[in-house]
Length: 196
Image (tube, rainbow, N blue to C red; front, top):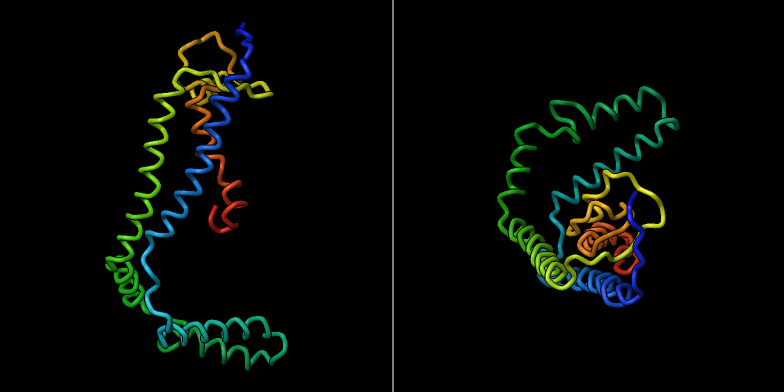
């Protein structure tokens, strides 16, 4: 039988709340640092070739949605005009598709932006985990209000080496990880839907 623990309210005030608040603040700060580190947009005027390709796709989409309003023969001839393998407007040869992918990966600015984004994620999380591990190691921080199986012990009681404690108790280190992976919804509310 697992032990019942009585959690002190000071643990809530000095461990749970600070951990949660710091995780939210670091997430918001990380977002703005990543935004500052991004490279400026390439050029304000779009490439005419890309604009033409986009307009062809829009025209093909309109053809597909309005297909029931034109005769079947006219629809088939327009479909061939767009999708013909030799000279269709929507057909891209495999060589050109591979060249476009290679050009995308050869852009040094894109690689640098990816590295900056990863760096703006790794550094704060490493420092936050070190902070949690140093100050809050070994705390039983909270109790989940529903029963769990023993398989959750390793996930929820990381840093507590007691086999007699009920599985529904959460250590401070595990609370850090639950916040790290569970705050995406809150960040999408704070920073906007696409930034969560």
